Structures are given as C-alpha cells and as structure tokens.
Length: 390
Image (cartoon, rainbow, N blue to C red; front, top):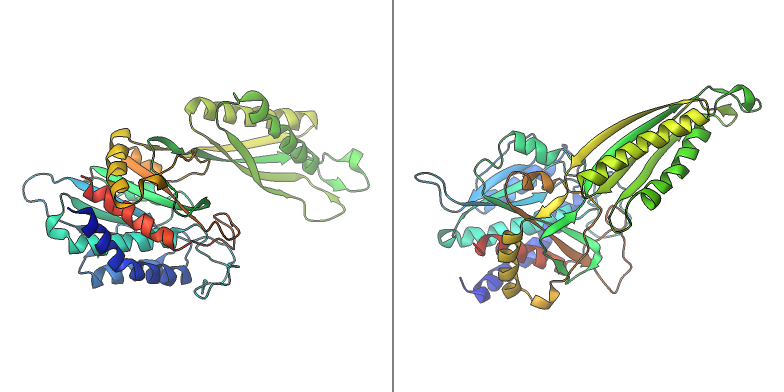
C-alpha cells in the first residue's frame, strides 16, 4: 500500500478527528461511569458501518477486516482509553467540560478521537487489509481496573498483538517515542495508619500524637530511595494523602497516609515495600504508637515494548511521518494498565508529544492541561502504522 495514499486518507479525516476530540472533551466521565462516552463512540462507529459490542458496562469493542473462515486469522488490536478525571477544568476552551468537576485532563479524549479516525481510514481500506483489526475502547484506565476487567472477559483471546499510545504535554508536539524495552513504570499503592493516644492539645505529655508520628515517617521516607536504592536505578516513593485530626486543640489519635511507589523491577519493588514497612514500624515504636501498613503490590506491571514489533511499526511509521521526529525519550515513572495486555500478547506503546512549545506547559492531570491538536495526526498515523506494517 502506497504511503502517499495512506497520508492522503488520513488527512481526509483529520478535521473529523479534531471535531470528535472536541465532542469527547465536553463530556468527560469517571472510570466505569463512561456511559455517554460509550454511546458517542458506538454511534460514530455505526456511522462508519462498523458493528460494536460491549464486554463490560462501559467501553466497547469492534472489528474491521476479514472474518476468520477456517481457523485463526492474524488480529491486531488497537486500544484507546476513554475515561476522564475528577479535575476542575481551567482551560477556558470553547469546548470545555460540560460536567462540573470532571475533565479529560490526561488526553484520553485525544486517544479515543485518533482511534476513531484510524477506524474511518481502515474501514475504507477494509478489503485490502493484511490482518483483522480489533478496536478496543477501554474504560477505567485511571483507576487501573479496566484492562484487567477486559482480560477476564477474554478480550485478547483472538488477538496476536496490540498497540496503544499516550499523549504527553511535557513532550513537544512533533516528538514521538517508539522504542523497545521499558517505557512506563510498575506501580504500587500503599496505606499507612498510625495509631497513638488522643488528648488535649494543652497536655501533650498525656497523649501519643499520631500526627507527629506520621510527619516523622514522611520525612524518614525520603531516605528510602536516596540512601537505599542504587542511584543508577529508577525508583520513586511519594505520599499523596495525609489525613490526621479534625480539631485544632485535640491531639490526633490516628493518622492515615496514602502513597505510591514506582520502579521497573521486582527486586526494587520488594525493597521498597520492605523499607516502607520497616520505617513505619520503627517510627511508630519510637513514639510509643503502632503502625499498620497495607501494600497493594503490582497495581500494574511496567510497560515493556516488544523489540521485534517495535522495529516493524517504527520502520513503517518513519515512512508516513518525518523520521527526524522519532526521538529517544527516557522511560517514564507514570503507570499504564496497557501493560497488562503486554503480559498476554506482544505489544507496543508509543509516547506522543502534544505540548505546544510556544505556550506554557501544563502537565497531564492539571486543570489547564490541553492537547496541541496537530498531535492528533501523529496519533492517527501511529495507529495506522501498527496495522499496515504487518
């Protein structure tokens, strides 16, 4: 298939992709609540004469290409996540969120729009496709549940390989990372509950202050990575929530901390878990209190790109886009439940820049996060490359 024709077909649908991105940005919904979003996706697929079906209460799946007649036909899955975040939008965009306190602050609207655009192109080329294409519009990525829910329902039972991507504003538009090996981190979540003895703020000697215990733990935790992990290895431990007390003159009896750890290997993960438990127990004992640690290991494994598959898709994509735009980007410490698919079949996950270099950069998950719209074309071309490179 000629590269010039593919580019022509992609550019033909680009305005529609941007329009769908605007539509989806207006209707963000939280994980496993994406009912309006799912209806929108299914309506657009219906307009393309593509049948879709649901494996879960939200999200949907569809096929393009030849039907299997006898035995197995090679199937390539393309995946986009569809959920938003509980973030108040502050962009001022004319197509800003219509749902108060909810926002597409992580680019999932762009992922979905670009996959719908790829579906438009692939449907037109359906009789020429070398493989069967499975479109996966996945719910519930932000709370790490969506991929596993679909795997339990057999979403990859007929799939040979899978491709996905993510838009990032801290990568400039026009920069694409399509590289083998580790790309995003293994993620874990933990909760630490410190228990002491409550009392009057004027009589601290009669109490055991859970707030002080928790504060000491937070500070002690800063040495876990800096003094116990080889500096050549990547690791992060962060506390995101600290809840203690509800009255200014009452010494708190209980403090609850929630945090996350990120790394790439089992060895480092095990060390981080052991270190968090050890430091929590040590701090609690030194203040005459108790600590209880709940550690949710392996929320999802690291995103790890298959070498052979990466080379094939990259070679094709460089013929559709300027090859100088494909650059090395260091692996990210963010997590992605796309990694669960890669434990079942070979997969590739691309990092796509969507930050306008002439404007302030607002990170993913910020209320002012935006997508520089030319990045949608890059995402569209990558989806096509994953299929047409076979």
